[in-house]
Image 1 (tube, rainbow, N blue to C red):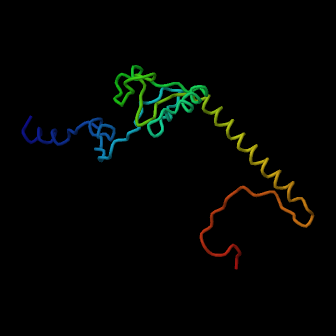
Image 2 (cartoon, one colour):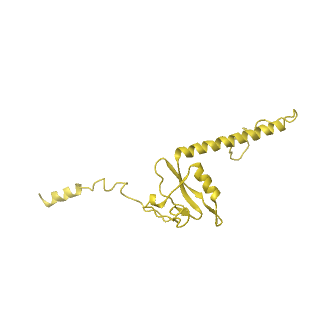
Image 3 (cartoon, rainbow, N blue to C red):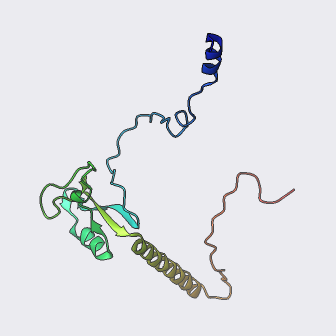
Length: 163
C-alpha cells in the first residue's frame, strides 16, 4: 500500500457518531445561587413539601400536629444518606431535614389528590352558600340580581363592539 492510498483511507475514517452525539456533550450550567429549600427527590408515588414548624422563634406545634394528622410524615436524613441538607440536631424532631423553621414532610400522591379535591369541594360549597344568601337578601321584585358569573376574561384594548 502506498503512502497516497494510506492518506486516502485515513481521510475516510471518521470518529464514531456515539462519541459526538448531543447526549455525551453536556453544557455547562450557568451559576445561580443555591436554593435553601432543596429537597431530596421524592420516591415514586410520594410528594415532598416543606411544612412550617416555627414562627418568629416559637414552635408552631399546632401546624405540625395538624399536618401529621392529615397524613404527612416527616422525612429523616438517614432515609437519604447521600443527600446533603441541614438537619434538626436536637429535640423532638432530631434527624429530620429542617431549614429556617421549616421541616420536610411527605405524603402519598393519592392522599394529596384526595385532600385537594376535599378543599375544592369545600370552597365550591362556600361560594354557593354566599351566592344563595345574596339572592335571598335581594329577592325584592324591583332589585333583580342574576347569579354571579365567576369567570374572568382578558381583552387587549379597544372596544368590545365590532365596527
